[in-house]
Every structure is written in C-alpha cells, then in structure tokens.
Image 1 (cartoon, rainbow, N blue to C red):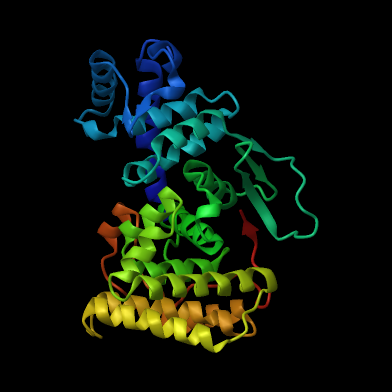
Image 2 (cartoon, rainbow, N blue to C red):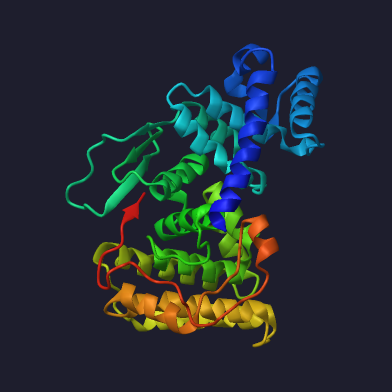
Length: 362
C-alpha cells in the first residue's frame, strides 16, 4: 500500500515540477534577479505575470485547478530540478517529497529552497570506524548527504534532515531522529505504522508525545528547531516548571540510552511517566475509552521497553502480543485510510535477529 501511495505521489509531483521547470521562460535566475532571495516572510516574491504563468502551466498540465497557496512549494521542487549536484535519478527521488512539503504549514521554505538547490549526495564518504552502525548522515554545515548503506530508507531519512535542516542545538536528539524516522515511515514505508528498521524507541517516544501534545505542536517544534511548543502544550495541562523539568528528564534518559544502549531504571524516570499520565488524564478528562487514551498507553508501553535488558526483543515481543497501532499523525492521505486504532495480534514476520543493534542515521 505504502509503495503504491509513494508511486502515485511521485507521478503527480514529478509532472508538476517538470511543468514549472520547462514552462517558465528560463530558470529562476532569469525569472527573478536574485533567486536566492525569492522569499519574504514565507511568501514567494514573484510578479503577477510570473505567478500566473506558474499556475496556468500547472493547471493546463494536470487538467484541474491547483491551490494558489502552494506556489512556494512549486518553486522548492524547481530548486531540485535546477540542482547541478544531483543526478536525474537523485532528483527523481527528491521530488517524491512534494506532499510532505504541502502538508506542513510550519516548514521554513526559504531554508528548504536553499538546501535543495545545492545539496549533493556522497556515496564515498568515510564513516566513523568507531561506530559501524551508522548507515548515513547529513552534514548540516556543508549541506552534503553521506551514504554508507545505499538504500531508499537511508537516503530518505537523510533527505528529510536536509529539507528541515533543523538546528540540533535547539532540539533534543531523540526528538530529531524520532520525528525524521516517523515522517519517513508515514510517507514512504510499506508498513507505515511499524517501526523495526531504526530508532524504534525514539519513534515510540515521539508518538507518545504526539498523543499528548497533538501533531501540529510536534510539527511546529520540529520545523522551527525549538522544543518550546511542546513545553508550552504540556504546561497548559500542568505547569511550566513541571513541563520543562520532565522534558529535561526525558532527554537525559534518551541520552543515556544513546550512549550506553541501556537505561538504569531510576525513580525519577518513573515519576516522569507518572507526570505524562497525569497530563493524559487531564487532557482527556479521565476518559479511559477514548481513542487518544488507548493510543497514548499503547505507545507508552512500546516505549517503556527501553528499560528491558534486550530492548529490541522486548519491543518486538510487545508488538507481536499487542498488535500494531494503526494511527497516522502527519500524512493526510494515510489519515483518510486509517482512522481507527487496532490492537490485534501481529502477523508481520520480523526479519531482525533478536539482540542485534539497530542501524543509525543522523
């Protein structure tokens, strides 16, 4: 199902971007005096004639009216086509991310445009030999995607890093990786609700927080490189001090897991989960039958496998016993298809060998 959706989206966005690329007179450098400064306060700076040209060409190609609010997204796709550092095959891959652009009102489109216009992919970079589990990473400074394991999933994960180019100093590491992997899963994986490739704890944690704070809040935090929207939302159900303290505890716990691949079960972490439970009860008015309540508790149960000796095995065992929670947080098309929460025994055949260390990308 996921592959079919991705294929359909690819045909649409590729055709649309190609129309913009070919239909306009010259490239963006000819169209606008300084194409690196086409944005002003998230709006594209185009003349009315140029603006009408873009929309008319797209509408004539697709055969139906397009939303006039998406002209900046069309230009982002055009930046990919103009990128001389990317092969045709790589451009084809990048253009699949049209829906992800359209569905995020918080994305810094100017930054995304600049990154996509110049990014390159390096398949020959030398990885850190002290951590062979790293399969790919995005170099934020040089705007280069380094690939050590050439798969669609690895490249896709790094492309999302490139599009968002979030400031890691402003976001907790677990949140960056969990959001990136969750977005990739929902838009491109055949099993979009099942995370077994990499960062399962980070994804489970992000899903748990999304159930508490809402998808818009999480997307705003990720897109603006700030944990403040999450802190503010939690504080609306508790206090600012409690929200900040427990988010710091969560980050400390995840940093311990990242460095040591295990977490010591300190009492303060129990208190942290008690805090999240109180927020859930306050938000849902103690309605234990609510869809959101069941989803939160399911993801919390998956996430708390982080305390077990063999994290991967206990995580997979939980999925096999509990089933897969089929809930989409960000992909609008996926939300249309799956609007329920299902916990039936999982019939997915896991290919990961129990006890192995999952691959990482940064």
